[in-house]
Image 1 (cartoon, rainbow, N blue to C red):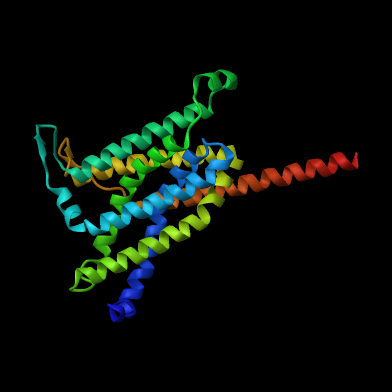
Image 2: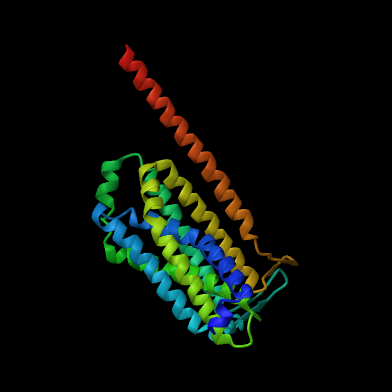
Length: 270
């Protein structure tokens, strides 16, 4: 096994898979950061770290059940009408429910942040507990973990005749990616908390990710609407949009800081 793990093909696959797992984990970090922001200051770092560790445990456990995951595409309910047809399976159901849950959470969070009467909002909303936040993180972790694991299985398919070797390779990639995410997750959370515009931008990204999950669920279930098959949205487009919007927002924040410093200097001179 060690000879396989140190081979050029395995190392290249490990590097590619780790990078891909980190990219796919951006969705997870955004949701965890925004959810942890509802907690008191002393519990936010703890919730972020525990949330990512839960993601690690879920992904490693799911990797051991990878043979079962391949059977999740077996349909258990089929609909075939003149205008819509689909073959619902466990994988598509999980993706659909996860997308709807993420859509609901993102929209309600945006509505809360746009409330004008803050005192009335504080009366209506109860403070979040660590248990509530971790439960939400656990649910969305499951959705992101299944998507991540199925991607990993597809990438390592046929890499070695012994499936145990590729299983170890996938576990190593997942562990490294989670360690990297834990190292940067709290810094990302602090930036999001510091700038309200970044929070709204992050929630907008989560809405896009929710629609991505819903369309992927329709694609997995082979949905056809009005004789048009539902295709999957390439994730590269989504991540490019996130990177571009994030870059614009960072420039905007720096311009605001620069204007603030100039106004402070002018006030001192006066």
